[in-house]
Image: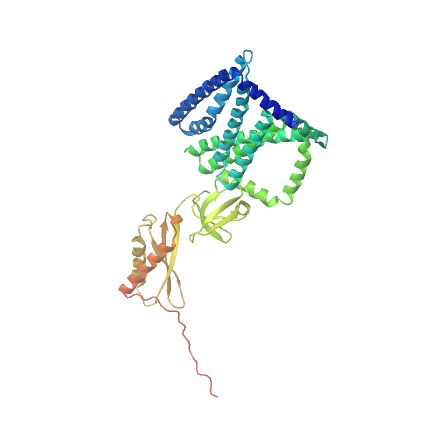
Length: 423
């Protein structure tokens, strides 16, 4: 049967070569492709003038303009010419151009939605191979036989009777609708991220929620299109619910917590927070985890469930200013008032220290070895780190104390030996 199909294909093509109709078909095909080429040029020129979301949408349309317009023109020409001459060459061009539309559309959506990686390259190759294989089977006249073989492989899931061809149709349609949903969600995300009127957390949350809803809607639309009853998935839905309730409980909790964090804006990118034993700047918030980068460059991945269920110290939630306290001890013989003045001057000499609220020095307690003082000052850029600032102020205090003759005491203990009773 396969050999007969291939033989029939070549015999029809050989007969067309011996007929003058082939020249007319070739001329019409060249004319259609030329018009498609000019339509593609026009689309490219219009894309340079577009901005924002329209530029992205035209970027996808530009990739398929040539094969799509060419296929439509060839179909229209075949419709008019099929009663006048043989149109085998035009019939051969239509599936080739259609497959090119499908491949370019899928590649554009995938590369626009996902980062370029090895799995993406592999998927694109497999997808292109499947599309060209289907076109080859169609051209060879073997596609109906292949479909009949796949339909003979049937099985049942509950009350739903399925076959392998129906399942493959469902996978293909769901894949197509999901790709469209991802493309649309990409347009929405780009529009949201470009908006300056919305908070960044709202933009991220709405973008991810839109993507999830569009993908879910694509699956719910795609499966009924091929006759697969969604009620047959109730068994799998129940099993998935049990799995989420037991094995995936913490993962599900982290995802829900991620949406709560993004929506209530209690933690934002750029905040300095401390949770558990981790402290650092929030550099990334996803629906499952939050990334904290400390001042040594180490990044901590904190599950969002921990941020919701424990106390979080946010140093820049409503006010980016942060107070830093430096303890200093001076000897009891020192001029305390002068020492406190020198400490304030050392802090105010640093450009990162705010003038309002002003830096202040306090006498906190009387220690065993000396008088305990504390220098308090405010900064507004805690995300740049405080170690160097603390070091510079401590160094300035040390130099000023040495110049003024103010001593920082060593730890000392006074021991008294009492004479015992010799009687």
